[in-house]
Image (cartoon, rainbow, N blue to C red):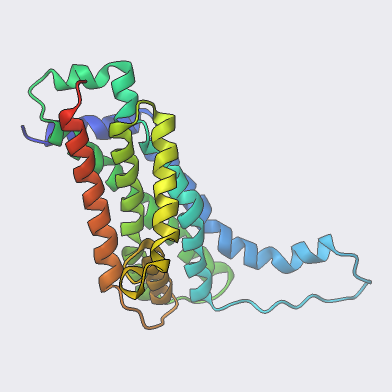
Length: 255
């Protein structure tokens, strides 16, 4: 079956549930955090400390590119958490409410069913990530100093596979867990494992995990040399394997 009708349904559901609004807005707010924090830090420290009258707190601002790159740290934590939470019920929730059974009684293949969700949530992740980084770059330019927009754009594109991996893991877990909460918990655990464990598994694996991709993206934004090939390939391959595993599980389930 053509995947487009299912994709249209998923996009309408994202709009109906306001995820198309609130998830990008959350990423924009996360992107604002770094430049606003660094700009206000001297004033915050002055108001929080008992300095004598006339004392001056002089905290040198970091390079503008470094401030933008630090926004990736916000996305790596809260941003990925948000994506897992919004995607964790994509299959498990519909299965629990009977929506999945209704949809799959029609001439809809399970591959098209899961694929449409992957595309819809993947688009949501990409749009949110781009808007969040655009907000970080713009307000860094306004509050901190001039940035290299080409470097910021390259680093943003490099980082996006990490967001797609979070979506893929959440969807995969949603296919074999009975409840959205369980799917979210396992998905978050998977993200943590993939970000922590591979760096201890040798040089080759350590160069192809999400943390290495975040590092490469940060270097790109800061205008430093970076090598994106292996981390991009590794992260996208794991995301693809997660979706294939989810499809294999869903194919054998009785909905």
